[in-house]
Length: 216
Image (tube, rainbow, N blue to C red):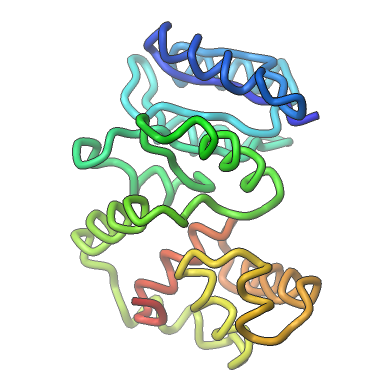
């Protein structure tokens, strides 16, 4: 059973997301929070596997909350909620450790799929809108290309191939098919990539790859 937390200052949004998640027999909403500070308290009191976190909230916003959640002894996966072409903080949230993000008008079935994906260790980077939004705010940050290239330099050529596909938003299964590898081998490569790059998840690795020019 996937234990979920919904974090949003809008009570109607919390109710709607909770009802949706609870409709999946494999997901149980064990906590709700109206702001980031409350989310930290709830995640400390409950074992949370995945948290759906709004960006704009009082007291502590979703970016700061994500950063704090990722430092807990048993950090939950984090999916950031945002409004497309309105929220300018998505890149910061991903850099803080979020495993992906959803637009608030995302199809309900896609929200459920995202929860399963991130809990399984993947990232929600597939929708075109998601990639556009990451690209938009990522590139306006003027990343230091040389520094990023230096960080990926220790990777083997095969690991760089895997990283490039990961940055494109491919799943482990997609990467295995493209590179004619076993999925278990891809998982091992991804694990070594995260360790070598000193990042906490696939999203941060993908953003670093984009900094280095390894992915379009």
